[in-house]
Length: 61
Image (cartoon, rainbow, N blue to C red):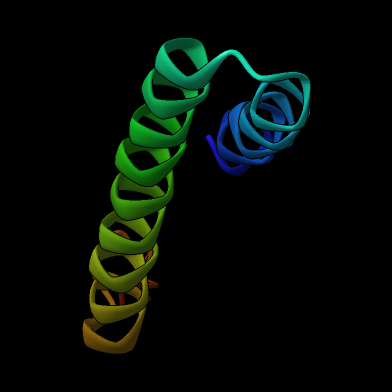
C-alpha cells in the first residue's frame, strides 16, 4: 500500500511539473488516501501485536 502511495505521489509531481493540473490533483488525492490507509493499518497491527493477538500458546503437558 505504501508502494502505491509513493507511485501516485511521484506521478503527481511529474504531471504537476508538466502542467496537467487536474491529473496531478487526482494523483495527489490518491496518494493521500493510500498513505492514510497505510498508516491506519500500521497502527492497528502494532496494537494487535502489543496485545498478543494471534500469538500461539503452549498447552501444559
